[in-house]
Length: 382
Image (cartoon, rainbow, N blue to C red):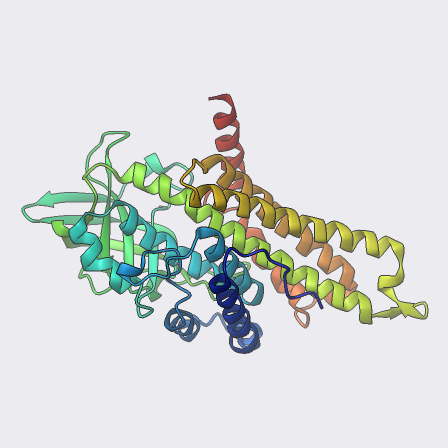
């Protein structure tokens, strides 16, 4: 079964990291997945293992506890994790997104106070941007943070928050004024903050171990020192961070597609019909070939965008292209994997059914694929 991807990596250190990731994913994560997803168990031990192995802090500076790895290496680690356990791949991507907000926008004081703990392997982050009435339209955010002396008083509800009630800290985006462009601000919020509570976990189609809840603020008081960057800079912070976050989801989607392809190829080589393996039928070979091309295409787009980011060049359009390409590919490949397995593929006895359900939401979160097309089109016509 072609579970090992033939990768071109920039260093021997990167090769060792991918080998470590593959070993953890195969031996530690994969055996847990079916039962944990069936029971919607939050994979706290998986995150602790990845954190202590240094895999939750790869694209950050060593001085803060990071691994100082290029983004292209970090994303391939995420893909390997997601190939074994998509929910954990998503959680890893979300955690990196939260830490990147602090690393890229926080003052020296905020960075030194919070970032080392975020990268320690002990903490897991959540990203509080979306609201019941504000998903793709970030300007629709209503959660308020009102200045009161040396504190902000926060009231409002966040929706669809991955790691929900299970995170150790939250990156919160709240409205500090009614200004359309400069009315949002970003804050670090530790999980033990008074006045913060959580809704019940959403009952989702897939990614059951990616616990997703509302995060509710009812007069929560945040020290002004927990403001990230300038007051009013939240819109810019949110949108710039999402470019990198979209690459994380592209890597997750590629991992889902890679896993589905591997299961389909293995099944096609074993399943006998008309006296020979079904993989000997040319029609099925063509289907598998198209699936493989989709996976390779998805990987190529996210790696190209990551290499632009690593080079310090603009990559927003390429991030949207990668997110669009990889998540649409995941949906097509998992659909075809179910088809390859026939009736068995439609049952929960085989992993492709779960991968099919997991793939769907990748087309929705971190900006729907319709939003990605808008981003790409506007950038082309700018």
